[in-house]
Structures are given as structure tokens and as C-alpha cells.
Figure 1 (cartoon, one colour):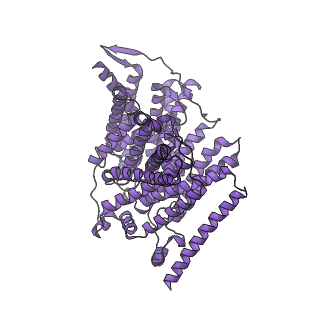
Figure 2: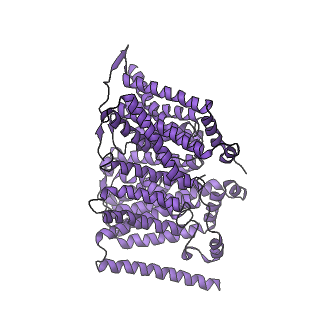
Figure 3: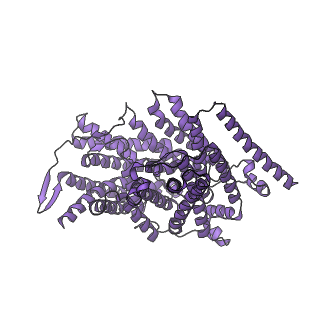
Length: 294
Length: 339
């Protein structure tokens, strides 16, 4: 029984990490209806910048996280400006292919020797891992840190979206670009802002990921990116609580399958559940079905 | 007289095909193309077959699939293992194994397509992507239920019977098949589903049937291409069929221009040659830049031509005569949106 609870905690840790990445996917999808395949690689860049920050540039850990977030926010805005904006009113698939191209670019460019290099790097944590025994449960300080950080970030996001002008603009743009423009919303800036926030979240996720699973390499973003994206779809893409819900489910499914079934079947079970959920609710758990227009 | 020009066109097409075939054979025998480039050429043609399958599914029917490589892989493994255990290098068995590869992929497409094709756009894409990952996990663990498949260590030992002749003429057959399908009433039904599903439904088209038909046919072509691949390249490994490979097919179809067979064929061939060409041009010192340049070309190409290189255009010989004026006027143009 304790074993199960331990696994639930591990699953939450993974799920919360996915949530940070899934938020970026879902926000971007909400405003531009684009699956931003490069998002997983922004996460990777965040992990690397954070790692360099606290291990080589001598920054303290919180400052390193903030640096990674700022660098990735800028990166996200630049990617949108160069690769997606020219295609905003082109067929949707064109922007998707562009996103794939950007994703490959970030992966291979990071693999170059004078950038991050192609090798795996082991992350030296800036602090020791401490285990606390609560009864028979084991909780680590890393897990607590992940939970607290993610909760704080979620609160900030909630505030940003529902209590600020930028958030209101983002909600408007997600409904209709032209109507938003008529209401005086600067659509371009709002979309840039969305990419900045989403990428900053991915960067925070990246650094936490590097601390929790201490190994980083240029292709590390692919699988977490894909899982987080799946989580966003599972919850209903474009809907922020959906992304968090989906991510928590993904985290649980993955850890439960590896712990009690087989670690190799992990991905297969996760995606089988996704397909089953979509068959019952074709737009995700919290997704709204729009009526067909004739 | 339209009939006579149509016959003339067919003869021209056949003559051109024979000329291309003869040219490649000549270059091969006179050793201007070495075996390395010969393999690249075969790879390009196999990719063409698979990409034409996705072209039917996405380009002509508008069903977003991100799991095409899974069907390619299923075909490769099915054909490979059949020929390895039962064929022992006889040519009839080789052809049978190719058909089995296509049938297995097609059957799987039917089983998975019936439920998931009711999903729309990105949701369908992610469901097919998920299916692709499930298949990959299955391949990785295949040795547990069938040791001959080799699981994560890969499978070798398929008789290498597919040479350029086989690959070339099968590609030729596939092109004819796809062309005839697209301009048949079924193909027209597919296009109408792509343009507007509700309107198609109102016109009396059974959209579910059409979507499943296109999906099964497209995936069977991928399976056929996979079977050919298994007989041309001796080593099958699950990582050759993962979701990144599906993106390769997708980008060929999109870069070529949705709803253009010409675009798919030309882009598939040039894309494979571009990748190998880069290896050659960059040499030892700059080989690390290959991925970077590949990615940049992809981004620049799609920004320059968002509708694809041959968006909506079709080479004359791929259009049957009675439709010639129709297709010439409008073509399969605005296939764009993934919705």
C-alpha cells in the first residue's frame, strides 16, 4: 500500500513537470491553433541554460532558473517572429511543418560542438537530495520543490490570464483574431506574449527536469514534449485546466505502468489511454465540442 | 479527337517511363552511378510509394495522419518475416510477401481506422501519432511473442531480392494505381470529403466509408513500400519506423503540395537525394551541420511556398483526358487547412 502511495507521489512529480510543458502547448494552441512542435526543444534549451547557470556561470539556483526562463522567453518570441508569423494566415499545416523544421533546427544546432555538444551530460545538483520519512512514506526535497514551484507558477498564470490586461487580450485573441483587432487588441504583441510566457514555463520545467532526472542532452526534449502535448490533448487542447489535468493523468499512468506492469509498455499504455479517451470524448476530457457549421 | 490524344498521351507516358528506366540502367551498367547512389535511388522510389499512400490519405482526403511510418514498418516486418521463414529466395514468394505486407498494413488500418477516423484534424493527428508509438513499442518487444522478429535488436535475414527493376516497376504501378484511384468516382468522393465533409454528406456520399477506404488504401501502399524496403535493405530496426519517420512522409506530402501527385513524387525523390547529397557536399569536416542545414531548408521552403511546391498543380500525364480541362482549370488547389 505504501508502495502505491510512493508511486502516486512519483507520478505527481512527473505529471507536474509535464504540466509546465503542456501549458505552453495549450496556450499557443489557444491563440494561434498551432501544434508548436518546437516547444519540447525550448524545454531542452531551458534545461541547458539552467544547468550552465548553476554549474558553470556560478549563479545561485533561483537566478539560474530565472535566466533560463528569460532566455527561453526571448527564444520563443524569436521563433514565432521568424518561423510562424509569416505563415499565420497560410494553411495551418504549413506552420506545423515550419514548427517541425524549427524543432529539428534546435536539436541539431544544439548538438554542434561549439553549442551544447552532442553528448549526454550528468547534472551536478546545486544542492543535496534530502529524503524525509513521513511515517512509511518517503518524500524528497526535490519533489517538494517541484510541487511548490509548479503551484506558484500556476497561480501566477491564473492571475495573468484572468486578472491582467494581457490575459484578457490573450483570451480575446483565442476567440477570434479579427474581432480582437476590432476591439483594439494588438494581436501580434499578444501572440508574442503568449509564446514568451509559454516558453518561460517550459524553461522552468526544463531546469526542474534536469534537477529531478539529472541527465541532459540535445534530444531530451522530444519525448517529454510529446507526452506533454499528449497531455494537453487529453485534457482538451486550448483549455488551461485541461492541460494540468491531462498532465497529472499522464504522469500517473506512466509511473503506475512502469511500477506495476512493465516499464517498456509505459508509452504504449499512455497512448492507448489517449486514443480511448478521444474515442469517448473527441475533443479531450474538458474540451468543448463545437457544433458543425453548415 | 479526344480519344486519340488520350491514347497518344498514354503512349508518350509509357515511352517516357521506359526512357527513364533505360537511362538509369545504362548509367548503372556503364558504372556512372555506383551502388551507393543506386541504393539512394531505390530508397527515393520506395519513399515515393509510401508518400503517395499518405498523399491519398491527407492530400486528397484531408485526413491528418501522423502515424504513416507505423504502417510502413508493419508492412516491412510482415513481408520480411514471411519471406524469411517461408520464401527462401523464390521470386513468386517475394511477390506474395509484398502483397502480405500491403495486406497486413491495410488490415491494421481498417481495424484502427474504423474507430479513430471519426476524430477531426489535430485530434486525429495525435491519435494516429499515438498509434504509431504503440506499434513502435510493439516492435521493440516483438521478440517476446515471436523471437524471429528480433525485437529491439532488429531483424535481418530477409532475402534481398528487390533490385532496381522491381522497385522501379512497382513504383510505376503504384503511380498508375493512385492516378486512377484519384480520378475515379471514389477519388472524387475523397476530394469532396476533404473540401467539405458536411456538403459531401448532403450530396449522398457515405463519408465514413470514403475516409476508411482512403485510409486503408493509403496505408496498404505504405505496407507495400515497407515490404519492398525489407527486401532491399537487409536490416530492419524498430527505430527506422518511429514517429520521426512519419514526419518525413508528412513533410514530403506537404512540401510537394497537398492534392498533387506530381508534387509528392518529385519531392519524395528530391528530398531523399538532398539528404544524401548534403552528406556528400559537406564532407567529413562539416557533417555535423547536416541536420542544421536540413532543418533550415525545411523552414525556408515552407515559408517561401506555404501551399507546397506544386500546390494544386498536376503534370499532364497524371490527368486522364476527360478531366483534363477540369483539373487544369482549378486543380486540387486549396487543400491547405488541416481542419
